[in-house]
Image (cartoon, rainbow, N blue to C red; front, side, top):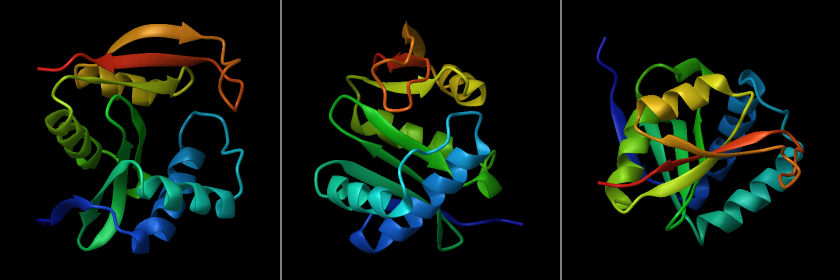
Length: 149
């Protein structure tokens, strides 16, 4: 069955879908639980939509993944658990690389080994490890970078 994937900039009307997607993806991943209630995530993402670049991957017309990034950082890359392994994360990461050809960094929780393997397969390298004292969850994390074309 051919499924239609569309990458497009996120719109304010997408924020509820982004919140639901983030909550579901974090709950299914080997990472700390989300420490913020859904309404705070909603307000945060709505505000970031005005400042950051946010792109969604729609699968058959429904938002199934999203990436949020700045000039130098990939802050969010979430794929709904029902759609992981379908290439949506790779498509969004390829998009970010094309829009940030000079490179970017990201942080990923040390415990999230599937995400770390995914990023490594996509050409990102680990450049730093921390004890987590500087993140909200207070969990060890890993800085990974893509150095560009």
